[in-house]
Length: 109
Ligand SMILES: [Zn+2]
Image (cartoon, rainbow, N blue to C red; front, side, top):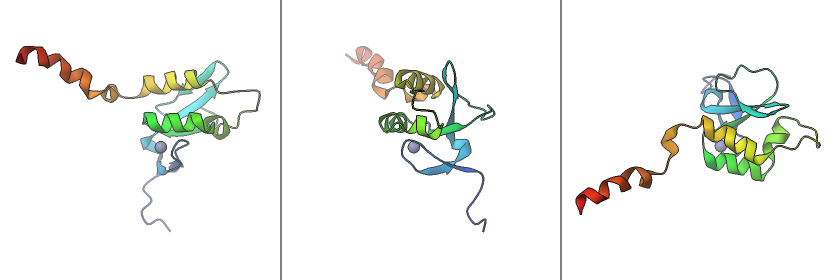
């Protein structure tokens, strides 16, 4: 059965929703720390996450990234390292709207 299937589907480690692999961010573990793999070509296991800060927070809270990557208990995922790697990969559009509009208020007064 291939009805409705358009490509490889992965489960977001944050919200647990399934999504097209191409719409998810792939995180790969390296000895130096987690890296984001935008092209999804790095070898090894990957953890998939929506490009959404809420999914990132959920994944960290539930320690889902370390589980998805099958890390041993001694290899704790550093939440700050994961957050920094993912936020760096998110589009700049996730900057709060208020910051963009507040600049115009002075000219109206
Ligand atoms: Zn998600």
